Image 1 (cartoon, rainbow, N blue to C red):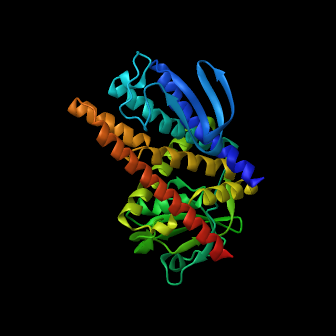
Image 2 (image 1 turned 90 degrees about the horizontal axis):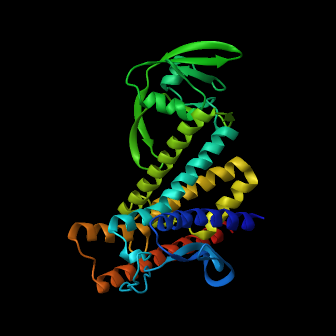
Length: 352
């Protein structure tokens, strides 16, 4: 069942990405010969609206084949106003950007749905207090539930950290303990900590850790729009920074996961809950959008760079340069895929 869920989720994400390209291309009058989910041998196809819609043997991606665009033939020229290579560079950039944009929009829709159905977060309940910390000296105890800090109502554990780090003075904590509301004034201290990339940082803290309790937060439609926007921006920024840290060597290459890891994550999420499945699908959709915008030849971001070069220099890159850079792009992508699969296999044997 997990494998089927993985293939369905991945196919939907790929379909939405390629649909973005397709709709933008058709908007500018470009003929789309093929819309494919998967690569390799064709399993099923249907002609509709002048396009061959097909499912292919290897369901790990997809593509739209437009008139006048072929990475294997950079010098290809197909005449007619319905040809991709005859469109203005800014129009081609919009067609290229539409795929990643569709993934960001899909993620926003999924996050909106999560907000309406009920987003699960860590409860603002204290599970552990560090010895001699500001929290202990102030009198906080385990199982205390923080309901407000100063004038900010607290509903999730994440809000506690955000409120503490965004202020510079002592804070007034309103705590629910045994059905009583108590108040404590706590002055956070700056201590050593780690961010999500395991980098050493200095952070304002009071010395508490969460209890293993979840709380479900339901949002109104207006609140859900704000939640969806914030989560899409937050996850996009996290992935962009993750790629940056990977290039800098801060995140080791052993952390790269391949298709096996993605499949396991989706499978585990589907077994956990429908909300968890929506959340991981949204994150993978953002990931797909971000990675496709990287300036690597053979990806949308690489082609966007070629078109920006044409806008700036008023001439296209030579066919030879285009071909070599595209081959380099495929080599980079192939290497990353093999590294991901290698890491996946390593993890399986290490667990075994």
